[in-house]
Length: 282
Ligand SMILES: Nc1nc2c(ncn2[C@@H]2O[C@H](COP(=O)(O)OP(=O)(O)OP(=O)(O)O)[C@@H](O)[C@H]2O)c(=O)[nH]1
Ligand SMILES: [Mg+2]
Image 1: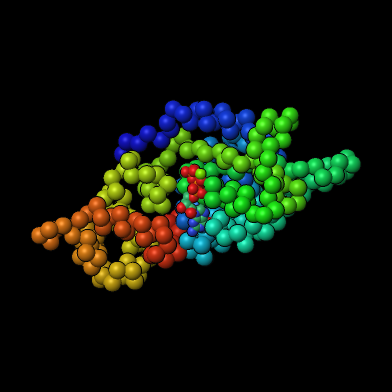
Image 2: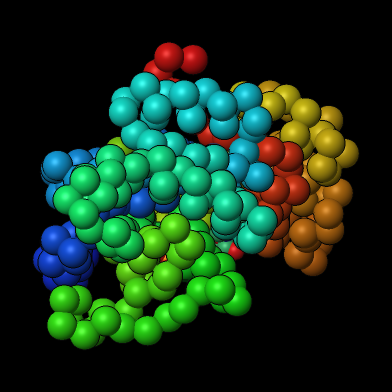
């Protein structure tokens, strides 16, 4: 597998991130609840030494409830402030505000002790592509109470979004791919659509996905497509194709179409709430 993980412009992105980090009290990292390991960039650890870290396990609505809990506990045990989150649901914002407040309580207290009241806590959102950074920022920005605007001087014209409880959020997220991604990680990121198919063939991605999903959840394919499971991955794919009419003339399977359909169904949650990775302790 030959993948260009670290395109040239990432150096620039990293430098930009470093600049922004200086401005904030809190780094909010988003990961995808279906792949909480592969969607977490280990390079952030080096970038954010001595920064307070809050981890949002996003898209938990698409992931397995038991494993959501397990991952939440796992990351908590590593010392992160952690929250299971659904960025598409504005009602969840209160939950986010509460955990940000909890994570920054000591900072606020320090200011209070110095007689500084109403000091704004600044935060920024980071994460690899597709974890939901823009969705989250937009949901905050769209709220009636959210004010956008820049604060010249201190912040050199950067755009901030105001949350209640005196929290300001930088409106541009820090997007960064890790420098190295394992082969399994690459596949998991392809299953969720984080790595686009220019990198791997869609047929290859779907084949690996079907192989994996059968091991993880015996009923997922049967429930969705009404096929009887075979031991052979290719037969499962063919059977799905025939059931769903992903066929070329002369009864040949249209592999591109069936592959796209299966992956879209997974990405849309139509195969059920599936988490592809377990924390070490489970
Ligand atoms: N079900 C569900 N879907 C979500 C959630 N958050 C984001 N999404 C979807 O995930 C996809 C990617 O979300 P974005 O907000 O564009 O992700 P991003 O991190 O900004 O991605 P880049 O801009 O590529 O770095 C979109 O289709 C969103 O609708 C969530 O909590 N639950
Ligand atoms: Mg985005």
